[in-house]
Amino acid sequence: MTCFNSLSAGDRYLAALNSIILIPQLRDVALYIYLSKILPLMVLPIGIVIELLVIAVFLLWKRKRKPARFFVVAALVVLWISSTPVVANFVLGRLEQQYPAVGLNAIPDSKCIILLGGSLEPVRPPRVEINLLDSADRISKTARLYRAGKGELVIVSGGNQPWAPQLRSEAEETRILLVYWGVDNEAILLDESSRNTRENALNSMGLLRKAKCKKPLLVTSAAHMPRAVGSFTRVGVEVFPVSTDVRAVRILNLSVIDFIPDTYALGMTTNAIREWTGQLVYRFRDWI
Image (cartoon, rainbow, N blue to C red; front, side, top):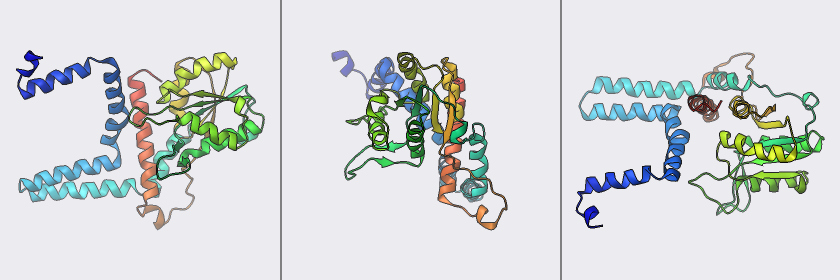
């Protein structure tokens, strides 16, 4: 303790930082947060706009007005392009078309259905009910598959993120909705510890072996399906993809409206770039 107190403030900071890095759990959480939250932000439209504006402010501070104007204009162009429906439908559609949604009759029967998380937010004050996200189609699609006899068991995969612990896991919250929508409680198996698609695949392996299920139906958003199928294939699990939550639509006749910025279109473009980034990270880590 005496030796630690004798260090300068900078040395104490570095020593504390090194001690955190050497703790495996904290190191893994820090890497997970960086790869899943910080890194994507740098290439998302809003992140790029912020970066360009920060550069513009710095140049203005240096009294370099002409180059500062260039970065401001560049920020506006990036924001406008990424917010147009024509661009949003194109970039997100490229992902969704890899595993297009099919009708119920084209889906084979299986012993089990795997439902990936990311469809809801838990009850938090002042909420009194579960908050459904845009991807909640995953839950309703799974319930429909079960009621149609496409699967006997439902594996719900979804744990809490390290920075958002809850009393109940996302998988447990999803189970409540599935039961409400007609799935038998006894037919639901929970994976409450997975935080990402890679862990979804790894944790599902044991549940699949327990259920003696060889080729499950995999339910997730159409844009997320390529990474999901790749993750399960990488760990040796063959799945039948059941895409849902299809957002990109085929524009038959372009109009002025398709080039007017829209917040929903910005969200679609952001989701597409986030998913492309996720695929790059997964390939870098040899997860797909």
